[in-house]
Image (tube, rainbow, N blue to C red):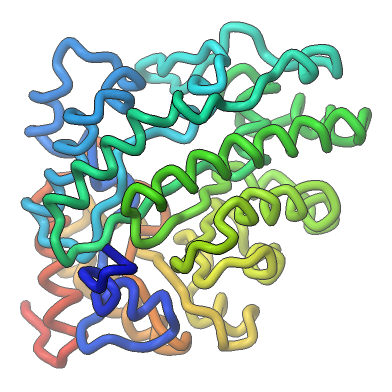
Length: 351
């Protein structure tokens, strides 16, 4: 769709290319999924990762928020641990906890047992993306993958962790094994991203969910080169790249330096400050605080307008949340935000 012109002039792609479209684009991380009643109905009896690998189901779930909210982009319904599963790593999503691995990586010998993704294993992803873009028309699809540090954290910790202590301990105690592990993670994430783009995604986002646990020097020396390696899998494919990390305020400039066209900013850092740290020349995405989604409309409205105003400090701005949609979010609130962003960005602010 990007190459044949269907999405090349869309508001999202225009903004990610560094130009301000007539109407500010908006989409939401985790817009496809658990906050929607139609999603919950569709998912009955199907495990999360199985749904991700069912092309028909994944496509329908991806399309649901576009129909409901009128967002300016779809984001492919999947999970950052899907590449691990496709590479043969036993992993499941445990309700209330998140991804859990049967056998965590704890040594150099464990790393040596990891295998690359068989290209044929990516066929369900390719089919799911192709089905989706056939329905989306001029609305772009955002593909995504987890950054190497976040994937490695799950592999080493065996599941979600507050401080990634085991992962960071491996990083400093055995730098060689750490580099080998992150190279593996970079390669599976890169293959996952490339499959989505080749099947029709018009942009991609690389998520680094746990980057906030790192010092600036550790990120620069032991993580950023591997994130750059992930994006190198997209060499030759001309699509915009977004990079987002939670708690990433101290490393925003380093994240931009790996080859991203736009930087996602979480809710902790005002966009004008983020733009200042990035020299005023990087496209920004974000950063509505998800906590406001359950606040009275007057408070949420003022917050969204403030985000829009601060986003003017960047060359272009894509409105999003500062993290994903919480499951308890009222879908009508998201629809209302989309209307507010669209009308405010052309000078007509609804009450």
